[in-house]
Length: 97
Image (cartoon, rainbow, N blue to C red; front, side):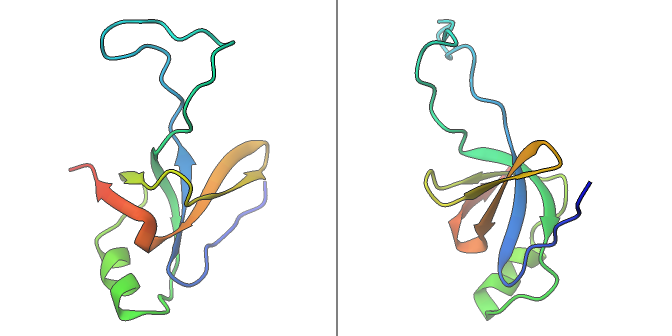
């Protein structure tokens, strides 16, 4: 498997699976259009931030943390048969505590 390391102020995220059941208990069939996940687990973090703001955000992140990010921010790629997202730290909205 190829190992990727994000550059600059970026992180690599493994996206969470789309919701199969709504909060009210309605099951979403596979034929329905499902929203893109806006959360995922950090798989890799850049070593060298290119901005002071990005460095502060990267310092508060760790591999394995669940994060929420903006809907259209990530660049989706396939690595070793698995889909991953690479996005800028400015697109991260929150980290689960």
